[in-house]
Structure formats: C-alpha cells, structure tokens
Length: 162
Image 1 (tube, rainbow, N blue to C red):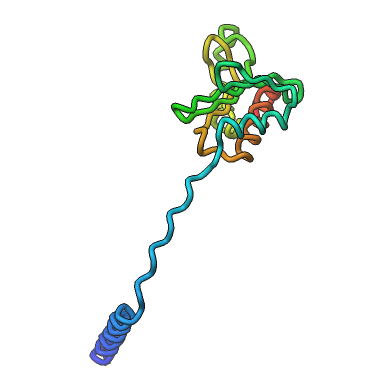
Image 2: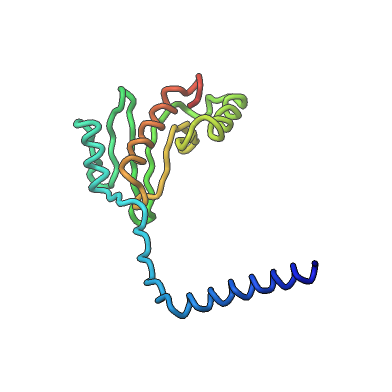
C-alpha cells in the first residue's frame, strides 16, 4: 500500500512539473510592468495655493518659501526647504525654559501615542507643535491633515495633547 502511495505521489509531481514546463514554453513572457509614479506631487507653488484657500489673508515671506496664516485663530507658520526636500508646519506654544520635567515627559508620551503625525518639539528656546514631511512626496490631503493635526496639538496642549 505504501509503495502505491509513493508511486502515486511521484506521478502527481511528474504531471505538475510537465504542466509547468509546457506552460512556460507556450505562454509568452509578460511585458514588464511600468514603475509606479513617485508618491506625491507637492510644489512650493501648489502649497502656497492651498494655504491661500485655507486663509485668504495668508502672508508669504518675500525672500523664502515660508508662509504665516491662521487656522481657527491659531497662528501657523509653514517653512519649506526645496533643496533638502523638506517642509515644516509649526506653531509656537511657549518658552521651553518654563517647562517642568513632568511636562517634558508628558510631551514625549504624547509624541508616541496621542499626537498622531504632528509632534511636540523644542527649537530656538521654544516649544512647538509641528508636522515635518518630505516636500515633493506630500499629497494635498496629507498637507491639509498635517495643518489640522498641528493646530489640534497646539489647541490640546496642556490637556489631552492630541
């Protein structure tokens, strides 16, 4: 009985192998698939148009690709660096030297579990709510969501930090 099963398995393996060889000889090779487009299409010009749609009074810096505008009365700054393919959405919250160790710990926890893609950060002696992303890979919806998350992080600072 065992010999018949072993022989049956060998026959099945041989049939599968023969079918695979036959298919490879009769099926033309697949054409190479085109490479997927690089994610995102953001430019500084498009970013400026989006910001103007969100706040018609938005101001663009004369010498750099930076904007100042308001969302729900919260002052927002967007700074871009095309040479390094970066952009930052930033909202200043308070002087960093006024923060307690417990507050710094809470901000670190929020960066992990409640702030989503926005983050709390310290730079230039200030605490910021910020969203940082590669510029050219950014989609319009991501940019708008990043602004919303940063505003929420600023507004929930000291309470839910979300």
